[in-house]
Structures are given as C-alpha cells and as structure tokens.
Length: 294
Image (tube, rainbow, N blue to C red; front, side, top):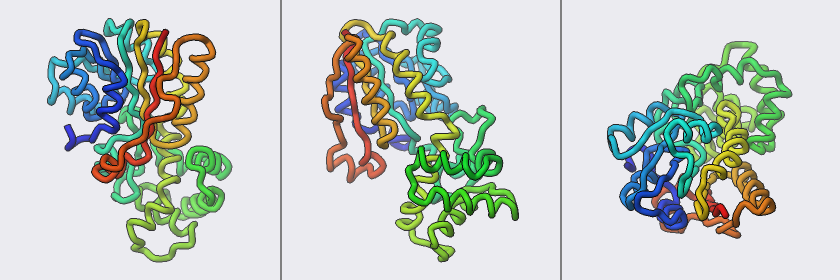
C-alpha cells in the first residue's frame, strides 16, 4: 500500500488495538488503507471512512470486498457507523493529518514544494478552498488562522503581505502563496533551497489546510462520538502529527477518564522509532495515544 501512503506507527497502533478475529473495527481516516489492511490480515472486519474519493477508489481496487467503505467526515462517525451496522465495535483508529498522496499530487494544492492550484480540500466536493480563504478573508482573520493554527511568529507580516499582493492580482497557486510568504520573511531569492522553503512555509500552509478542512473541530466532534461506539474493553487509537492535534486528543481522553468511561492506556504518547523516522521522515512528529472503554 506504500505507493499511496505509508501508514505511521503501524505495528504499535495495531498491537495496542488488540485485534480479535471476527471483531468489528473502524478506520476513521482510511488514507491508503495500510492500517485497515493490517487489521484485515489479523481477522478483523473493517469499516473504512474517508472524505477523499481518491483514497476510497484506491483502497477499493486494492482490498475489494474485504472492506466496507464509506465516504464521509469522521466527525459524523456515529451516523456512518449506524448506516453500516458498525455500532458496537472492538476498536477505532484515527490517523490524523494529510496523506502522502495528497501532499505529492500537485493538483491537490497541499504542498509549497509543488506548483499547483491553491486548493487543499480533503473533500473535493467541499465549496471552500484555500484560494477562497486567501483572497476573501480580512487581514485580522488571516492572522488568526496563521497564529492559532500555525503558531507562526510572522503571522501578521504574512497576512499584511497577502493583502497587498492580492490588490495587484489574485493569489491562485501554491507558488504564488509561497513567494509571498518568503518575501514576508525577507527572502528575496527567487529560488530558495528546499530547506528554506520548508522553514518559512510549513506553518503557514499547515494553518491554511487546517482552516480549509476544519480539522481541529472535526477531532473535537468526532472523538466524543466514537467512544460510544466501543464495546467494553474496546479501544480508540489516535495518531496525531502536531501539538494542536495532540493536545485536543490528550484533553478528550482525560475527560473520558474523569467521567469513568474507561482508562488511558498510553500515559505518555508513543513516538516513532529512529528507524521509522529515517525510513519515513514525514512520520517523525507522529504521536500515538490509546484509550480503553470500560
């Protein structure tokens, strides 16, 4: 499955889910189906959910009738589970963030390293694109996105540069935005190194992607619904990729525990091994947290 997306913390997450042959499992963020494929190989039955039709089509070709597929947002995991008779399950996995396929496909507009339309939608049917936000929001609104979701130290300068630039012409591509961000950082070189591009653009592009897809809101809505789908001793495994995601997951799991809904299995999040980080550099920031229903 690796040519589409390399599953992160695969062995660790599957081990902690304690797969039971014949048990029902929900992969709430299907991607390339790596976690689902592993669960299936151990005898589990899987409902795979994703917003991205590319992911659903890819996994359908790879796994066929072995897996039940559903297009949808995991914030509605309760409704999707009900429609597919997966209301009492042994485990649920969330692999948050963006897939390798989305990053590596220029026309999806996720990467500042690849020229493409400024899109960033995980759901290609959504009406809200990154281009729309960049060209329509006010300076204060852009600042809030970059500061809150990217924690970028030059959020105000970037927002100001965007406003000035779009008065001259609309900002339509990933390259347009990357150049504006680089200039806001004082970089005048038209061809900065990949390292420099990553240094100045990563947080801005991350923030915009989070805003386009309402990623943090989806986690806050989806996890509290997911807990009620678990059988006794069923487990939720969540893989996050930055501190904003991880802090939400940590807080929700603590709230579950305070309400006597179960126990936190991972007192400290599990991080990727040095070997995995070398083999898949995009995985190096990943953290895994697991909760067990009582």
